[in-house]
Length: 462
Ligand code: UD1
Ligand code: CA
Image 1: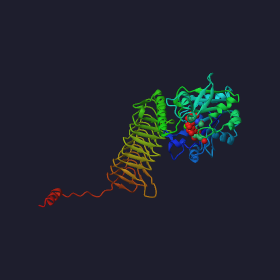
Image 2: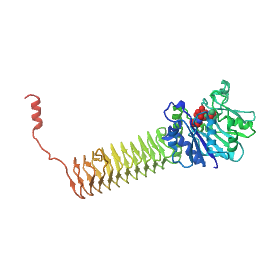
Image 3: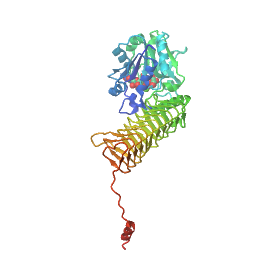
Image 4: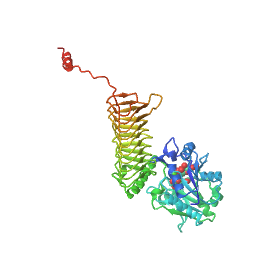
């Protein structure tokens, strides 16, 4: 697609009642602006120009480092028509197809953007607008057609008469394509004589038609693709629509979802076939799950990789690698930098941070393991922890293959425990343990016979 995309993201987003830019609000953990930028890039846009203004630094930060994406500042928010004028002047856009997208239009599909660009590229029209008939048209600009079914103009909700608001049900979705030369030549003609005293981009269609240029529209059969986000209620509504769209695709690809309505998978996550997802599960960011896994219930995975045949029950994991045949949870908290190798286990009420749990090694109950490298077939007894933080530094622990850590062992790092070693239950291990050794750290047990009977007698005053 040989087109420039301009994304309008400078608005105040007043109706969100937020301290943040509207387009920074997230849908399935991904900022709205990233949904639109990614759709534009997926459509094949050569250049994506984002107009920022209100909370501009926040929006710029969300777009930092993305190839082909640049930001332009709209210092004063004088309306969508003004925003486009600022962009084309700042970027010297004077030809070629230009697609303009409202920044609050997150569910727009790449193929729609491409179709739009093609219409003007092929010279069939100098401008095209995407339209839809949502169940509730309130707030949208309304399309007025002439008797031949051509676009006469777009009337904003606030400029509509009661009659127009009731009868003009075809709405402007906020996705436009323009011939760049026509846009550059006429954008300065947009006025602000309207209810909001703003320069309205939709006025461009009427202006170009008056200039004798062909103007057209595309009705979007699925209105959901064209919905905008102006309020928190709409944010929630679109989040649910995005969830349904992603879940439908995943189920079609062979993923089982016990309850799709409580299964939230982000747009950049992947799930392999025959994986079963239980209710109340969030699979976000760049998480990738392989085949034949069982995930959930009550699980949250962020930027995590899971191999095949693993079971992840009531687990929270971020930036973690989980290999094949691993068992997690219920109630495991896996923090960044953790790697669970094949056939390993992170069990119940277990927290693991920045550690490798070797092949077949198990941390089954009530443990904290941090900054640890563990070999294969290690067993960590219940309640054992690594004391990795001395108040200043995070220190490392190593544990060799086949070692058995007795229950309630405190491993005071830095410490190295060899292979085939054993630590006795209740030990505080402060010195390295050689291969094959038993480390015991325990005061001798004393036995005081008849204690209970004497105590009871004392209490009863005998
Ligand atoms: C706009 C359209 C309306 C359409 C609807 C679709 C106009 C005048 N109206 O209305 O016809 O039905 O979208 O959702 O365009 N923005 C700027 N600079 C500004 C003003 C706005 O960058 O000076 C950005 C906003 O950040 C937003 C987008 O433009 O992302 C649209 O603005 P918004 O105020 O949401 O317009 P709507 O009232 O929804
Ligand atoms: Ca809007």
